[in-house]
Image 1 (tube, one colour):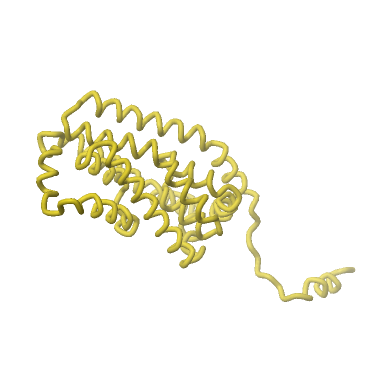
Image 2: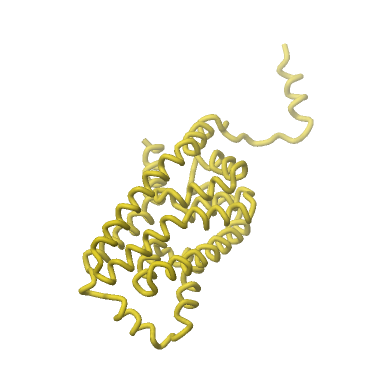
Length: 247
């Protein structure tokens, strides 16, 4: 019973950001262009002038510290700057936030992630070290994956910096473009563009699940095989113990 509760808590922690993201996007869709449009947003940004994109990228860079969902911010970026500009700004912010998370995770070590991931952490850590680029890429490609958590787990486990961060940036390109297009279409009142973007996000989800099946299978199988850690005995004692127990 305790293991079931622990597993439920872990899944709630993992799925919470995704649920918030979906809820935010649904709220934006319900509010629609009658509530806010690109012209209104640009008027609000006038005091920032040419520094508006820099402010947006800087906020995305520290987004993990605010616990805000990246999808909602990317959609808002699409509403503010349009699809292409928001995609470029969001990818830049993703690179900076991934860099921040990587070095913070290396500083904190493995203990926080061991508590969060529980029995699956050894398998996740092993996969992150062995397939650092693929690990980060699939974690970002699949919207069901908690990207920040997976990147932190990889960094804390010794995954290399450039393959991990490059995997994050490349893996977020499809979802970032579609989400920015969703926000842009919403702000401009283009129902067809919004619908196409929504369908594209669903397709991205399906493809992420398909491509990530082998990785998830490896993690699940490895988590079963990982033995329970035991206290290490000082050197020289195992041989003496064997000698004592030998009939």
